[in-house]
Amino acid sequence: MILVTGAAGFIGSNFVLDWLGACDEPVINLDKLTYAGNLENFASLAGDERHIFIQGDIGDSARVSKLLAEYQPRAVINFAAESHVDRSILGPADFIQTNVVGTFGLLEAVRAYWGALPEKERALFRFLHVSTDEVYGSLEPDAPAFTETHRYEPNSPYSASKAASDHLVRAYHHTYGLPVLTTNCSNNYGPYHFPEKLIPLCIHNALAGKPLPIYGDGQQIRDWLYVKDHCSAIRRVLEAGRLGEVYNIGGWNEKANLDVVNTLCHILDEEQPRVDGKSYAEQVTFVTDRPGHDRRYAIDATKLERELGWKPAETFETGIRKTVRWYLDNQDWVANVTSGTYREWTAKQYTL
Ligand code: NAD
Ligand code: DAU
Image 1 (cartoon, rainbow, N blue to C red):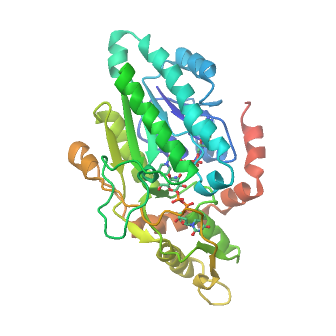
Image 2 (image 1 turned 45 degrees about the vertical axis):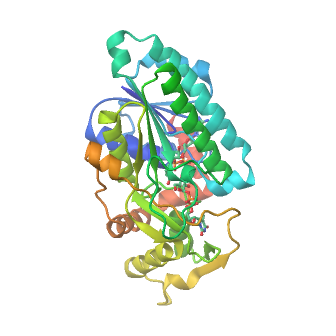
Image 3 (image 1 turned 90 degrees about the vertical axis):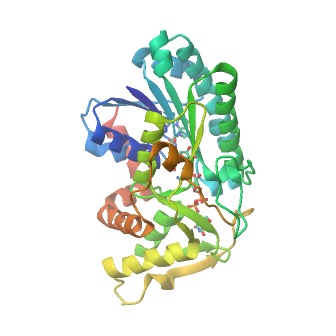
């Protein structure tokens, strides 16, 4: 089996659902259930013994060590993190605690477990650390996309904490020989995305008749990847990645924020027109910029394609349509998240 941390969040839950859709290898889901963790995402797995949920903190080495000894996973995939840049600006402490100190605690437990495995299992074991393109900093408009050798220049407390965790993972490979893999991915979008991030926030606000807040001039560029493509890339790196290597994951979809939001509005205009016949784009509202806002990210995912044959299946146009459709079809999920009701569901469904 595999141990997946932070698996009740946006990307982790997509990863678990896809994994169990594709194979029968059980998953231990270790998640602290912060505001971003939502067990309602696993409603379709109710009663499925292949999904074992454990509430806990990656930084609790003793707890993680016990879990590792009990379940003997062949791999650990670390998604657990505080992930929202704006929250890291308002209050960086949780980001340092989970992303830096927490990753350290997890690495210590994994190092001890891996070190004591019989030789054959030791050779097959993997620790895959899920990271972000934000560690590379901000690009000039005409600069080439980030490759894996781009220097680290994190600009927000979030990206600095992720950079620190990447360095720890690297050091555990270099110093102790821990069999690690690191992935640095661009902006994800898709089902189960918490409506604090740009795309789900704007879909939610558009339908609620609220303003669509665009920071600054809206010309900041992100590279967008459909979440299920991120999941397939992680599966491929886990399967065949070279030990100690870093793999960039991206969608080759550079878009300015304002263009992303206008695209969302046009799809919503078709799928669920406003009652007054006007476009949702009329709700776009320019607001104060994010402090230290990175202007442009772009990922060069050539290495992953060349070495492991991975390419994204979705274009931005196909992925964003699927995403809007998912949100329209899952308004209850959004309502439960925005009202906080998902926490009550968790208490009813699981004994934690
Ligand atoms: P998310 O915020 O939706 O989910 C994070 C999950 O981690 C939540 O379920 C939360 O409860 C859990 N968690 C937080 N602290 C924990 C702790 N101390 N111990 C155990 N669990 C804890 O985040 P996401 O968007 O799914 O991102 C997952 C990972 O992917 C993160 O490491 C993030 O840095 C990385 N990443 C995200 C994106 C993106 O666009 N969302 C892109 C690239 C990389
Ligand atoms: O690049 C990968 C990163 O993508 C991940 O590491 C992070 O975990 C993830 O949250 C995401 O970070 P961003 O800051 O890029 O995502 P967010 O959705 O918060 O913002 C996307 C862009 O939209 C960014 O330029 C800020 C802008 N924005 C965001 C919000 C929430 C707005 O203009 N208005 C908003 O209300």
